[in-house]
Length: 105
Image 1 (cartoon, one colour):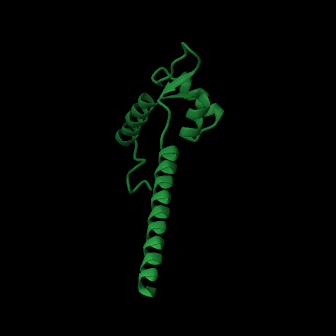
Image 2: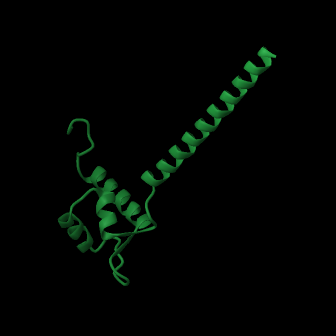
Image 3: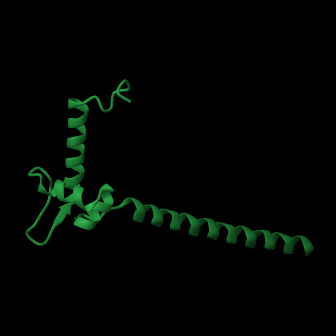
């Protein structure tokens, strides 16, 4: 009887531990989604936070003719076009400057 009670306690503890691990995993996944996701269309403020830039830099970017901004229903920046714009201009830096060369660093 004593052995069976001990086994039952171990099974309960194991189930509680599994439930705790599952809950922590699900919370971690949710935290990751919220931290690393962006809306499909950003406001000016969201884009500033995303790019980690200030109001002046954001204004300068939005005045560029090649910057992906929509003004028809308020200032909005489509996230997928912003990512393409960043990629395109990162390539320009790689091709036209020595910024990423080891010698320049």
